[in-house]
Amino acid sequence: MTGTMDSDIAATVHEKAERIAAGGGSKPRPARDPVNTAMINNWVEAMGDDNPVYTDPEFAASSVHGGLVAPPAMAQVWTMNGLHGQRAEDDPLGAMMAALDEAGFTSVVATNSEQTYHRYLSPGEHVSASTELDGVVGPKRTALGEGFFVTTRTSWLVGDEVVAEMTFKVLKFRPAGSDDGTAGDAGAAPWQGPSGRVVDASERAAGVLRPVISADTEFFWAGTRVGELRIQRWGDTLRHPPGPVDPGGSMEATPDYVVAAGHGTVYSYVVHHNPPVPGKQLPFVVALVELDEGVRVLGELIDADPGEVSIGMPVRAVFLRVDEELTLPAWEVAR
Amino acid sequence: MTGTSTVSASQVSIGTELPQLRIEVTPTFVISTALATRDFQDVHHDRDLAQQRGSKDIFLNILTDTGLVQRFVTDWAGPEALVRSVNIRLGVPCYAHDTLTFSGRVAERVEVDGEQRFVIEVSGQSSLGEHVAGTVQIALPEVTT
Image 1 (tube, rainbow over the protein chains, first blue to last red):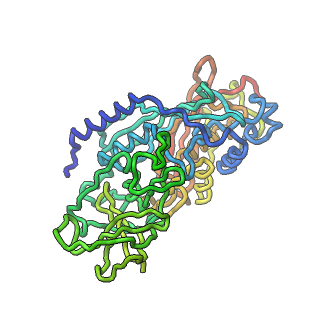
Image 2: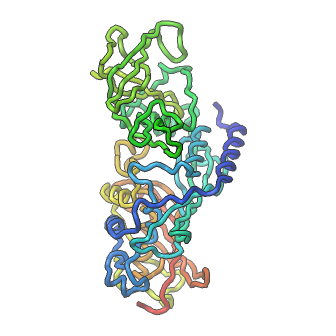
Image 3: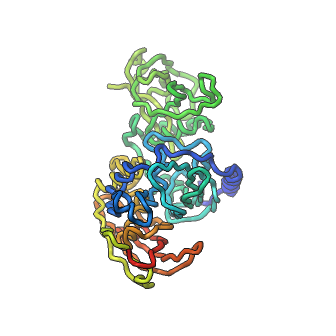
């Protein structure tokens, strides 16, 4: 690959950006909690902000506000997705990030945050947030690498009233030097991911067949890149491979996922002797593994003598990092 | 320290320097502010993962930068200064074990929607350089409160 961007890639990115922008703002998504003094107290303690209008009811009552208020800079805090939260499905920033991931611009850094506060918020008020894609500029050469600047606009609402707004800009880029894999590569293997080790697959995976990644499976492949074996979840039901519709039949349901611990046992397996397969050394073992979480996941069982493999054998997940875009899930014998 | 009295508009002149604010960016500070802003990205609380992603250490998140810039200005202006906007540009990361020093000055007086405001220019420097720079708009009472 050369350092010059294919103009087709840029055209595709701009086309997707236009489509996403034309979709308008996301449906206002309510904050988990109303504006509340507990979260305000945690915030001012952590920031070291001792402004009494946030915490001293008497002082606040006699102040210009007439009562306790939240720090304006907390506007965004109320609607953060939280520890297990997911982006809203119609979040245009998420859609644009996925489109740029697909085009090979896999790294991200925020560059600007501009927040305007139309009024102060009081405990008990419940805000919602809606985000729209403002624009995508690029490709630009930057110190970090070639990339696109993506600008979104978020509005925070109480009812129909816009109480705060933010323009947020990120640079989504291909790290400088990543074309030849020598520098700027934050994901250098091996390292321990949440579901298993991530190891460099370069030698064993030359020419490996690449999966077709769809909107339904993008989360799974984004997970393998960071050492997470992500299993789709519909309500309480885990489903693998992931699919587009709730197994219960509901058309309203949307999935999220859990991160598997990466432990399981061999449910079934085959030893592949012939014909040759690109990126694989013969013979190799493909195992259907039943995870401790209950679903079964296919993958190559690496570094195993075919003769030693048996049904019920404990295995653990390992991730074969092929390149910046692709990391394949696999298994190794738990010894 | 905010105190209980607020600077009045007549006391402020263009070019006034704000008292500096030094923040010791301990790992505890990075983590407690990340969690208080409900930002659970691992680079703000897990050094091993932050390093695997190419960072030197865990580092401050953006919502905390916004909060600190606001605090820096209201620490000087007082509790009844009304914060109307916080615009920041992000520079080098601010890693745990660094010191972040905010400085700022009153840059101009503007009228927005019939309200008199002051624009405060702010810069936050860490050992690696400028971590954050930006402007804050505030409205101040006409008389000292």
